[in-house]
Amino acid sequence: MKRKFKLSKKYFTDGALIVFSVLFALFISKVTENIKVENEKKEALEKIRMEIRGNLQVVDVWVNKHSEILERLTQLSEGKKDSLRIKLLEFNYLNTYVLFNGQSLLHDIISQNAWETSKASGIIREFDFDTAQKLTKVYSLQETIMDKTITNLTNRLTATETHDMKKFDLNLLGLQFLMMELVGQELLLRELYQGIL
Image 1 (cartoon, one colour):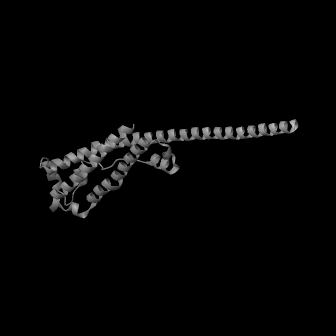
Image 2 (tube, one colour):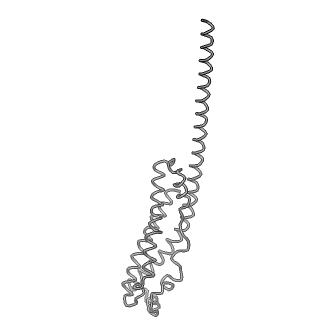
Image 3 (tube, helix red, strand yellow):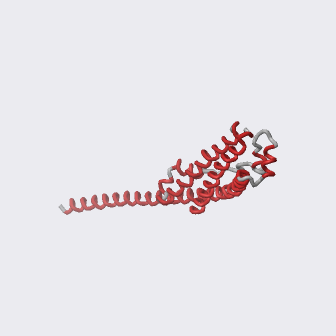
């Protein structure tokens, strides 16, 4: 009987040791996985912040250039830039090079590679709700600017009716409204960028 008890005690001890070892190994594995995920999350957030810093530099230039263009359009619409009006009316089309003072509409684009990579890898599930919400708002506005506002403006600039000089004032007004929308969205985007950084 004592021998059976000793044997049972030995089996119980061995079993408990095995269970403890397995649980300890699972615990270590989980801790290691948590550390790995936390490091990936920090790396993803840092890459997103770097992307936003770069995008902020681009948007700062955009705001300055587009505000200048908007100011020229506004002055033309209000009849304050007669010399520019006379120069533009010399052409049989709307000369955007002259209108935009020799500047292109976009010198660079804003990117969302780090954001898209974070979404594709699933690491954004680890972001806290507030951070994920702010980033979603930023990148949604970026997408709206690139895919809608700039596209609408470009379509307007390349449309045949925009170059009908008989409708010069009406076309300038339409471009002014589109440029107002673009500048307003860029100012909001800059503010959102700064809120994240």
